Amino acid sequence: MANGKKGCAVFPRRSAGALLHISSLPGRYGIGTMGQEARLFADFLKEAGFSYWQVLPLVQTDYGDSPYQSVFAASGNPYLIDPDGLAAEGLLKKSELAAHRRPNGGKADYEFLREHKFALLRRAFSRFDRTDPAFVQFCEEGGFADYALFMALRAAYGEGFIHWQKPLRLHDASALEAFRAGHADEVAFWQFVQFVFFRQWRALKAYVNGLGIRIIGDIPLYVAYDSADVWAAPHLFKLNKDRTRRKVAGVPPDYFSKTGQLWGNPVYDWPRHKADGYAWWIDRIRRAFGLYDVVRIDHFRGFDRYFEIGAQEETAMHGQWKRGPGAALFDAARAALGELSFIAEDLGTLDEGVYRLLRRTGYPGMKVVQFAFDGNPGNPYLPANIGVNSVCYTGTHDNDTLLGFVGNMPDWEKNNLCAQLRPLLHSAGIPARLSGPKAVAASLRALALSTKAQLCVLPVQDILLLGGGARMNVPSVPEGNWRFRLERRLTAAEAQKCRTWLQKWDRLP
Image 1 (cartoon, one colour):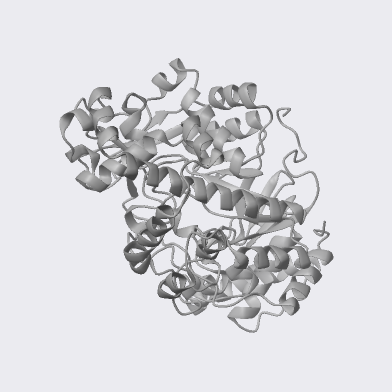
Image 2 (cartoon, one colour):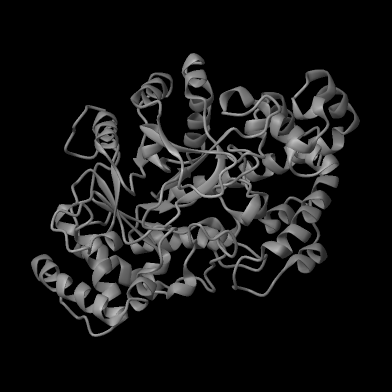
C-alpha cells in the first residue's frame, strides 16, 4: 500500500458493517454458536444492506471468559461449536442435546458451559472416527500439537503451567514425549475439538461470504501468560529463567481507569522476534487471515511503543514506555503474505510515533463518536474531522451502548451534548429531534453513518438502541463481562429500517 494514501485501499467503497460476536447470538445452548442462528443473522445483514460482519476474537476463552485472554492465540472457542451440527453428523443424540439446552435468550451462561459443554464434546469424540482422513491430515499438519499437549497437561496437572513438574514446565522434549504416549486419548480429544471448530467455522464463513458479506475479525496484541503460546515459546517473551513473568503489559491511567490497566500479559522480547524474522508473528497473521477477510489489530499503538510494568506491581501507575517493532513487522508480514487488509485500533492517547506508523502502513484507523464531544473543535472523533481512510464506530465492545452512554449522563452534560449536536445535525441534513435519550442516541448513530469514513460499523446494541444493560465489557472490571446476548432474531422490519439508513448515506452494496 502506498504511504500517505488519501483513499482507503482496505475498503474501496462506502459501506457499513454490524458488530456482534458469535457468543451474542440467540439460541438454546447457553451461548451463541456457529449454527443456524448465525446463518439467520447473516441473512439479516444481507437483507439490511450491510457488507461486513465484525466479530471479536474467536479464541478459546480462559480467565474471566474474555476473548482477549486465551489458552492459545490460534485456537477456536469450543463453547461456540454448534451441538446441532454434531448431531447431524451422528456424533450426538437428540436426548443428549435436550439435556444441554437452556431457555432461549438470556446472557451467556459460562458456569453452565464450563460444567456441561466439554462433557458433551467428549461424548461426541467417543463416537468420532479418528481415522477420518481429514482429521488425520489436520493432526499431521501440527498446527495444534502444542495446544493439544498443553490442554492435556492441564487436565492432568491443573491450570497454571508454572506449577507443573519442572521438566514439563520447561517444555522438556523427552518428558513431553513420555506424557504424550501415556495420554494419547486426551491429546487426541483436544485435536478433535479444534478440528470440529474450524470445520464449522469454515462452513459458516463460506455461507456468509456467499451472501456477499465479508467478516472482520480481531487479533489481540498480547497473549495470555498461562497459554500454549508462552509455554511453548518462552524465549519470545520477557520471562525469568524459571518461566515466571518479569514484565507485563498494560496501559497508563486514561479515560477508562485512573490507575491504568494492568493486563498481566507477558510482553514480547522484540529483539528476539526480529532475530527470527518475525516468524511467530507472521504465522499468527497468516492464521488470522485464514479465518477472516479483514483483521482489526487490537492496541495498534503497542507496535510503535508499548507500556510495560514490573510483574510485582499491583497497578499500572509505575510502568514505562518501550519501543516496539514499528513498521518492520508489517513489512516482513507483507513480504511473506502479500497485501493485508488490516484495521488499526488506534484509540486512546496517541503520539507522533503512532501517527507516523499509521501513515507508513496506510491502514485505516478507528473513530468512535462517543469520544467526540469534549468541546475541542480539533477532536479527531468529531464527524466533520473523520477522514475517508477510517472506520467509524458508534462504540466498541469496551464502550457503553449509545443509549446507555446518553442515558447515564447528568442533565448538564446531556444539555452540553445536545448543544454541540444541533449544528452538526443541521450541517449533515439530519433532523435534530433531541427530545429524549433514545432520540439523542439515534442522532449520534445517524452522524456516524453520515461521516466520510469509508466504513461505518454499528454494534447491534446501537442498531436496536438497547440500554446499558446490553453492554459487552467494562474495562478493568474482571467479572461479569462478555455475557450480552440477543434474546431474539432480528426481524425483516428491522432489516428494512437499516436498509433505509444505509441507502440515505450511500452505504448499500
